Image 1 (cartoon, rainbow, N blue to C red):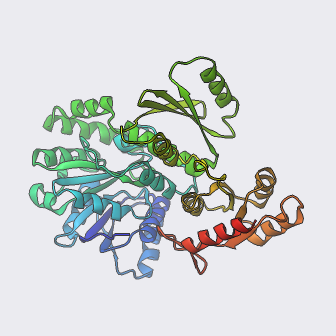
Image 2: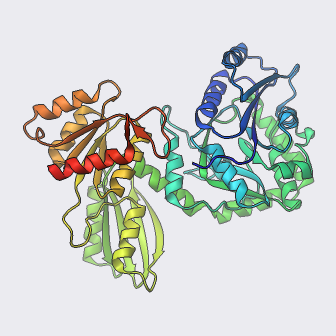
Image 3: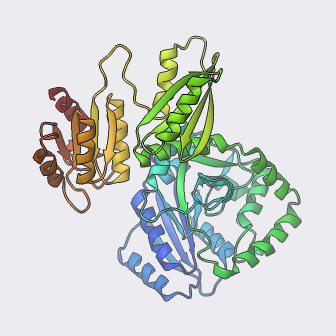
Length: 481
């Protein structure tokens, strides 16, 4: 993992919302590395629990954390400006709402984006609730299930495409990275925006006028609850500050409207959503290849897709010369993607590329069927990483989370090998092993047992065994079956 090369100060203005604040701070401390500081500024919160949260943080004496309290309520804009003024000279600044939760590698991704082009002035990551940077649904709040690992969405974004840092008409203030050169060029936020809302839009329009770009960091994801600090004042603040914004930038809404109408991020969102479903639903993928003339074959395939959609992820690849359309069918919805086969590209390589992108397991041409691995792991992030490594090693892979599911799938599929996490929630791996060994239908299947270490990086370790060594052990056990 490459770490941020420039100093970065993360400024978190705080007003009430104690529970969200605690989760925000814990996520930053757990998922941030490199040369950074976390500046927490309490804007005269009326919720006494905020003081307790900050007291608990202060008691930990963390060198990268600094705490400040406003004597009176200044509002978001002035509190953000105070944080910018207290940032280290020369450091870039990230303004982070206290009702957010960051994911592993978030700051590293933002720093990579900033390093890609010196004209980038502001950077916004994807989020579940960030207006034009929302996914999977555009310009909507996508509620996040409590307890679900948001790191899987980051992983899905990384798998969807190489980051391209597309242009935005404005950044979104829930998490806004600001380059130091831009701060030096146009200063901090305009105090007229008071308690908050619209100040980041004004800044981004001024940044564009000064020759800087506002971009999306399309390989980073930050959860956002939204509106916790403002409560019932939110609508009034938004209406007041929108009037100020339009007085200064009359074309602002037109520019944003044109961006929404064009929706240049649609394909990226859909690909990320597809990979997220692959990581979380754990259903095997089936690729149907048909010609583009319709008829009985295509009718039969579509009927088969409809009848078995709860058991499989279905992809319908329709060939029209070298132009191919892929339909993804999921939960009654259909999404389409267009692919072109290059003149020098073999059909085998073309189809293998599509299958790899959508995690569709196919045996190699002319080779024996790939071995099946059953993964018993209840942690979503660990499961996703292990599935990727096993598939890269040539395995078909299916995942379950409990001993009961493991027995059902082991009976049904008779996998070549079973990989079991020793620390399953509510039980342990030995319980799974006992269940499998007690059943005559599964007793002879090789079982490899390990556990994911607490510190999960891109190349994590499992117990004392490196992940690559574990996959090699799984392959060895499969060959012995």
